[in-house]
Amino acid sequence: MASQFNAPILIPHGSDPQALQRISLSGDEARAYYDEAWLQRLVFEHAETLPIDEIDRAYAGAVPICTELWTPAGAIDVLYATPQGKLVVLEAKLWRNPEARRKVVGQVLDYAKELSRWTYEDLQREINRATGSHGDALLDKVVEASGDMDRTAFIDEVSRSLRQGRFLILICGDGIREGVAMITDFIQRHGTLQFTFGLVEMAVYRMPNRGLLVQPRVLAQSLIVKRTVVSLESEGLVALDEDEAEEDLDDFAKYCLRFWTELIDRLKLDDTSVPRPKPTRGGTLFLKMPKGSGGARLILYCLKKDEQVGVLLVFSPGPLADRVFESLREDRREIDEELEVPIQWTPEDVEDGKHRVQAYKNFPDIRDPRYRDDIMAFLADRANRFVNAFRARIERIVEEL
Image (cartoon, rainbow, N blue to C red; front, side, top):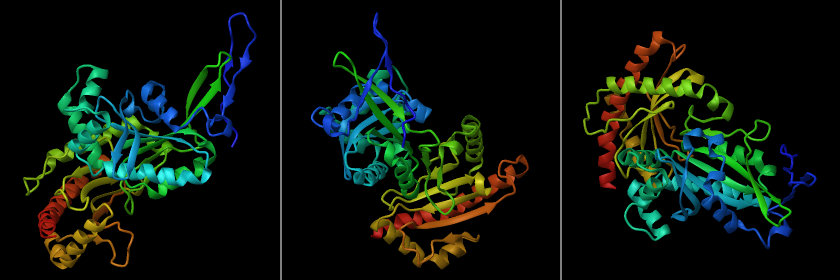
């Protein structure tokens, strides 16, 4: 694929302009001088060079926290956090072997999945290990870089980002361009968390004084790659491409905040132990399920493209989720009678590990004010029914396993 970027022109004082020569970091000539450790240090020590706000403005101002953060899936190259509590995961890669691209993308998805199983305390512990620090190194580093801030709100947002799997995942390096189509296709087919994904190409040019000029580039033009905003994957909750996600983003975010705030005010749960959810800027709202329940999530959603709203109980794939869901399926008749409304279960012959129970309803236009009260009533009613039918039952199943 031809590059859409031209070489920078250097105009020395009193000399003729000259086009700078690009160095291929993934080429043989650069191997002796530039490796992934060099690239990792560069993007950690100079985080301001990353064009994060071009990918997702919500992650602008990210502060470098640590390198080589351990997870069960391997070490994350660089972790950043914003003063608002949003997390950025970066993988530095020089693709000298084109066959490694799919493996790398799968690896960063595994990082995100592992992080989504962590609590704030888990993240704090591993950051301390990576930095040799004590106390709350994550909070301390962000406060040091950003000044005074709402520390409680920061911790709450980090915890929420972990719980929801909401991260900005960046793959940064050289040799990316030729594999863009494959990479984004892989992300769209395998994404299961609420992360934003971006590709950053590091173009390095040789300067006349033997120095280097580094030009980070977002590979996000529609002819090259559509940035993918991945939501929890179900029958109807899949990926939005960048064009869809960016269109009227501010209006959509404001609409969602107002909608979920109003719904939360109307939401009356019989189970008062369920923490009050916080409104989001997206099309989903999350109610907490018992810890250790196989990654169970109770999701309220509004899906504009299908003019559908619903409540979805979904489990992260894994052996524990398999056992919990199988126990629920054994009680299916009793649960169906208790719910007293039509629901859909994952068919028994489906073996993709994506266990779901869902209740939904379609409307002519889910944003039409004429249907707002009916939509609110439906979601509030189904959420209460699902909490009553599943939360205590899942808690009991987990205790007995």
